[in-house]
Image 1 (cartoon, rainbow, N blue to C red):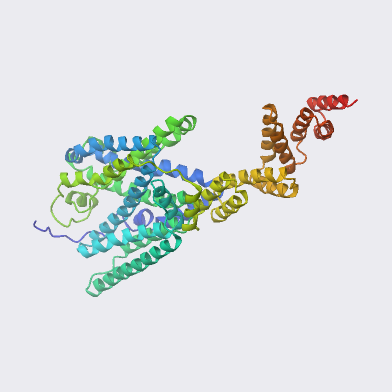
Image 2: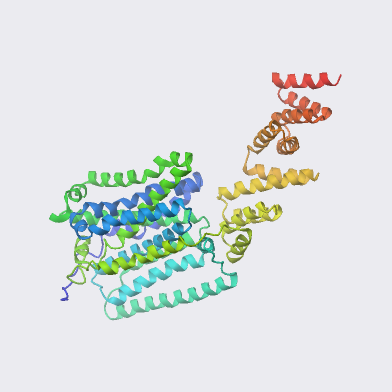
Length: 557
């Protein structure tokens, strides 16, 4: 194939110095502090949900706009664009309704690959901008992205726990802590060697007269630091991913707009592309609005998902299908090596050719998805057990979620003091984890009930007050639970619940009055009368309290 000369690009920037800095290079400098500031005023789970909806799902739309709105591209890959939604939809719906962990494994691996390949694509664009098409550059860029992105998942206890817990569903035992440390040591050595090779290559090129591509290196460093901060140094798995997700989404939306704006000038782009991607601020607003509207699918269907388990699965499957299509389409519709793609990105292509569709080779790649899915259908997933939870916590002791799940399994086994200790470790690592705090409160109350039954009142009171520190309404909940148990005829359990409520709040009138009812029906008139008097004192104008008090006083004459 004849090589096409690469003319010197007009500018080494994609959009310009300040716009590149804000949208592509230094975006994390704004995103990370903004995310942390949001979490101070908004629960982290709400921040995560909004970003996943309007960011992660919303940014799936631009790739689909190109796939189905670019006439020439659709004509070229029509079979893929028609079959992919059907195949991926069937896979996502099947695995979701079967409750299979396989869909989470597939989505995780594909999302990581998608994230690192986007960064790799930007690195190649910045090299192409200065005419640096040498294969060694591309090779080192790719392996730096792959090694540093994968290395973060291996080094992070929280991410390693997540992967091992998913693998455990299919019978894989977690690695021992020593084996994992050895793997991490080897990975860090390999990362160091690769990075040294990357730096040496840059120095050699500089000495040969090629300037250092500062823009590319700043982007690579920003991506690696952000990815590691999000995955290694942030205990909240989802919050960490959100930080990188915003970085990823901003880059993606900006580059797609730039590409399609240039693409709109071509006759074979199609009417939709020419209409939407005109050079107009109004069209920019419409473009962003469409992205947000697509992302609004999750909030709009949230109520439906909360009311029905079946609808929840349907919605989850649709969201997963959208994400999978996004990952799949982006794997071949944005190849920088293709002359048409390079032209519309404003860079010089390495060769004057379009890459072949490679139908057979591409079809073979589908086996990487379909074979594991078929295997999953023949494997019965193993439910999580206490032994597995203990092994995972030992393998990844720095993972807050590992300690949380261990605490919940210990509680189910009625090893309550150990459960409390595990949940406390989890909260120390991830103070914003509401699920761990709720679980700790439940376990403390359960432990307090046992202590109270054993007449260890001081211990029970301490446990309950600790639980109430995270749940101010605990006393009311215990009182209501006690009343319900009394109505069901469970008097012993009702007494325990109501006594617990009074240990939390001795001035809770409802607990005193409810306890008076239970003691009355249990034949303990003196105790019933004492609590009725105290309840009436705390509610001097309550007619029902006075009526109960008169009834108990009258029965003693």
